[in-house]
Length: 436
Image (cartoon, rainbow, N blue to C red; front, side, top):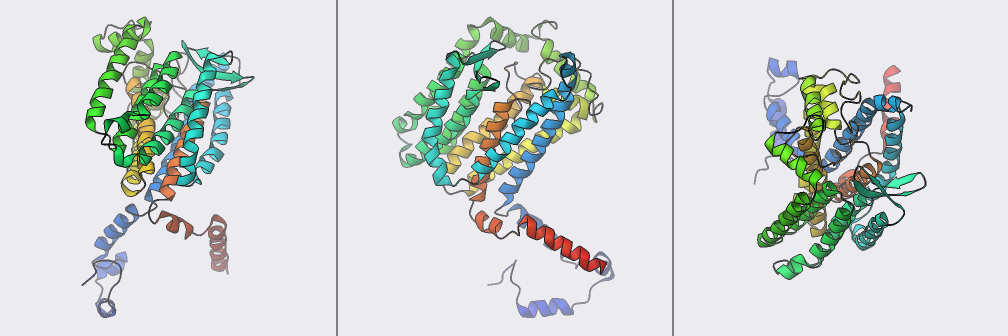
């Protein structure tokens, strides 16, 4: 049986060696079949067992660096207006990133069995932290009470809830995987526990975060293979709950009517969306230049947080916004590869929840900025300012990197790589040899 790739019989190799090379091939350094081999090599790299690993690490690094740059650019004017250093928000965000890096590294080195064992303790810990919001440690801002503070340290427990729920749902449903055709096993205990967590977040009036958690739970259930009739019932109940929450809040109702009727007051409920749209429109194809935004001069509220995508569009133009979309698309592609390639249902279910959380939250944030969704206040993952969101998103990506490192064949491929020190010494050795 003739092989089309890899091993070539010795006679074929000798025949190929004795075949004359055309002038064009000699000039370009390629044989007539070089193009096909190049394409095959490219496809081989794309289908490599470590592609998911490199997509995750590469896209995350670029988004993190872009976020730090844009936080500096979008917050400097407001910091000066508040009589602070223009680098105040940037340095704060950089500190959060420095804290998040070792968290990401530790999570990326954990094995699947260890992550399964962490599921229950993390869920209980996250629930306990969320309950602290309703104690004297709880803090509020912008109508939401969803933070806790001890001295100068503040955190948002609902961000911990996201990762804890993803791991816990993955552990529970993976153990019951063969029984999920029965609705009782599909629903209990996942939906009651998830509903309790969402309820705690809603008690702090943070509808945006609650919606992201609902999406996370839905993504995990879908990847677990829960029957679609369960989704129909759960979707109807969720829609009814959201309608009730919107109609009982004058502020939320105003945002919805503003979106669908177009009769917004540009000095009130339509102000933020209007200025975000102006920022995107001003940027054009290539942007007005890094640091040259006009909207960040106290015109656009939350320019360094929920509406940082508008500043990216204004300063870096359509090219900058498409870069952000492409990077999140690469993250989504890496997550889909893990889901398709990994044999462990815990990995598949947990990745499904985390992917809907990160990519879904990014799409919601962008939809809000461009006016497709009402303003609900969710940050752009890895880019917007915010410590708890950044650290927990990096922790979640660390979990995904751990899964990518444990894909079939990935551990062996990564172990076969020369270390950084060995590669550096090899480069130095070749440089010295060339000089001699």
